[in-house]
Image (tube, rainbow, N blue to C red; front, side):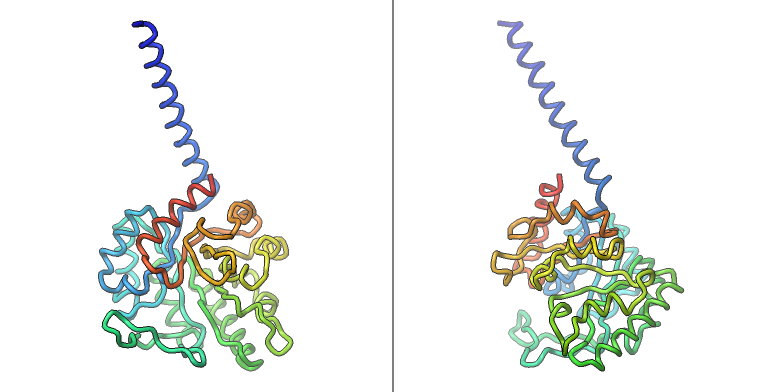
Length: 307
């Protein structure tokens, strides 16, 4: 009986050790294949400005390592100068990799209304600088803060003239970014893939900009919603998609969900990360109903999906 107990103990210890070793190997393999899991802070747009240090700490505690910043009601970089913001992230064990800016002055879409805050009143946003009017200033600030990428989050192209102007602005910004030691990229929604007066804007954005100077940040969900296959795009333009936005969609492609809870086959897409040229990917959930819970779910699911 004693020998039997000893045998069972040894067997259990070996099994547990093997399990722990396997988990460590999987974690190491994940790190080898992919960068740290990133987060686009727009996911927390409704709450982050209430307590920026506290929000960033919660993000770090969840496990996120790479940060892409966006617009803030506090102005600037969540109420800070670029170097201050970068230092706060570093202090919490995270890296500032990318920053989103607008291509032209912000305007609400026709018929849309500004969302309301907790007080029931429409939210107010400080004046936002944009690439058309402030590209050199924005390039200099982001470079000063030590981020790697400056990203155009959106640009107007409802008319032929707007599209022409937008491409000129993107080309000027990419030149300035290169001189400042930054990489420049463009982030899409689904509208870039819709026909505008006989033109598909995304096709022009790819062909009328320098592939060496302007990379693309492919929002996987918006691309799929538009009826496009990210993997086919990677094959057609290998190495151009340095950044990804990762969010999920329900079966109807109408609702944005946490990663791994919807209909997108992320394993297939991530299997082509090398072809795409992906350097960083950022979880983003537009209008997240419970932001901190939602980003925790996405973080856990990405690890499970990619192992």
